[in-house]
Image 1 (cartoon, rainbow, N blue to C red):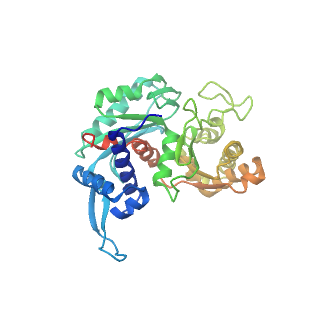
Image 2: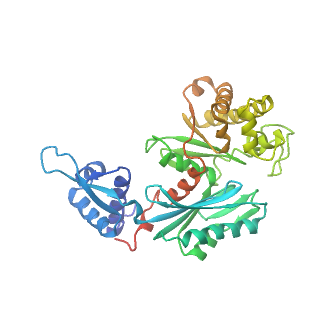
Length: 382
């Protein structure tokens, strides 16, 4: 095992202190030292560097517990900006996000057809607008895209609805915008967004976030870390067959979960032109709409029962447009999950609706840039 160099140790300490300050609205140097197990001298040196970089500021004094009143530190939210992209809807949405996950600027563009080149040009169009905004400096771009993604290489292996196959998206965007770029599956991005910004989740918690829009996917966090599987496709539940000899799916198989439980499936079964129309008649008590939504929820619940049995993760969050059907849909999902899973496991599994709608993917994609490495926040290595 190689011994860490002085520079590596210095960067590790810096990131440890920065992560601790990020995790708190305000915190003293002494408390940072206690939490990180670093010496007060080390913490003081690191904090001085962060103050010089403009990433951290002193925000007042805390309560004294016998000595001097401590000076409190906080992240300067608008000292750096990130761009997050959500490419998973019938429209692409991009946003400039600050270091506290606050969306400062947003750009949307409708997707009119399944044309890979046009979709790529749409991504450029959104990023051109966002990078021209006055908010500076922008230090990175995070992209949540549907389909199977090789995050390590930044390649969209297969996104059937965008007609992207083996698209080196990260490389293309880095070349054009001269910024670091990370690309991940949209459901995995939504999972990070909900985990970091969506609720009272513990840093080392296990969580499954199931994103139900035109497609369906799950993002899995184990001990607070995104689990992507050996090939990057962990949670790709939308293209698992649940209905033998069912409807032809966009992926080429028949009877995938997406064909019976997604927004696209519900709108199609109702023979309507938009989800808004389905929601309207559903809320007015239309019996067919109630039946279609209930059926979609039950198919999803059966798939979740398999996840419960495989992973035994006890907190599942539902996100995406299907959540607009509210608690009736959630109950259908829950009842089917409880029926399908081993009772001892299902009874301890909580199923709740997320809080961030489309923002989960945007915030998760941008946060993913900083999860393991804060180096892009610095003009040069300290």
